[in-house]
Image (cartoon, rainbow, N blue to C red; front, top):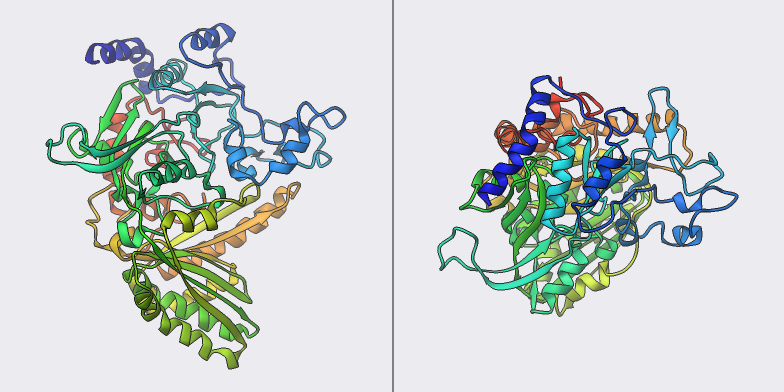
Length: 570
């Protein structure tokens, strides 16, 4: 392996080093530096499957007079995250498939083909590798380095900062790396033989619904993501950003449950990293941001015995605006108690309603009632203020059964969306909950009870994750959305509204940070907001393991050395 790596360095090093000396710009498909047909034919001979030529999700509906594909299928599946993830050019939020020029013109491929009548490539990559193995990824990386290509990595396309796409780029598509291996006595490489874990190794393309199905067959469960249909990737950006879960208050975040990670570097070298081998890179890959240090090929996670769960379901309708603020404020104020008791879950609100559910594994019905009764009674006490609420507790035989009922079906993708988040600390929810409530009601926020508890008990320096997580108890999310065909001026107006919420929340809680996977390109002081005091260390690790500066994503570590388009270094 060392000899092979030396050959890789020899083959690519000269060109890349010369490029680095000159500052350098990455090559995109509209430039003369773009590889020719012969170059791509050579790449084709080195990989296991045909090269992919990604197209926007709605491309089958064009031209309008004679659609090139099955437009009915596109319309029927437009909101389905699993269907979208099966295509190399499809993003979960279609606005990240579009490209806005400086003059406000939008290059897009809308589902409604009558809006423009044409299907533009937008930000969708133009060609890439359908990676099925480590060797495929190495071939793609070496090709990208040799030709100085603008490269993106895409698994499912679940990315609220658009990091799975870039205009005129070359893509490594990892979606089809679906290997799943359950290992009841896993020993990390380099670890003592008696250090064992009940674990599962997931290939880069495994999605959470596949991972949950697999470990459930062995009577196990694991900390993972939740979305309708389970289409989020289990080994990519979810983990690299931190990886939150409704189980996190009991078992910690995804980064706290990853045991070992395999990765291909920009040099083409393939490493398996953990606490014993390249521990600095293992540290960075757990919370230091996706698409930044290399291309992850697999992750090994802890699993836990399958347990019954208690489900607390709350919903309220509110006719009094003052009562709405009171209710939201008190819920935020109560988060520390709930998460420390082991409850985790998700909720949404409008200016006249609230809905959320908590789950807690292996909790008795008596404890579930005791730890929620105060909130239930408080909400009922607001009835004279125009608050009508109901609260119900259900005992569910297993976490997997809960997941199947709540998330096993349904759809939730396919809309134009930009969001911003804030990780509210214990201090903020204790002392500024009324001010926070005003913002949340104004933006019709969603809120995720995925911190506190076990998350707060873990050493902030145990992973590259933003240390703000270790003091957070709830994540709040504001967002904007719009219909296809909305003008760039209107989108800018909505964006200004989002920026206003961002500034207000930042001013209220400047130290609280945001979740890198659920945020916008407009966060204030993004290095501190996303990575906190770990940023400089993460940047040093990036420079060490990505000497060719191949892996650059929006507001990722090291991107502050690049122009806005992330194509040329300063």
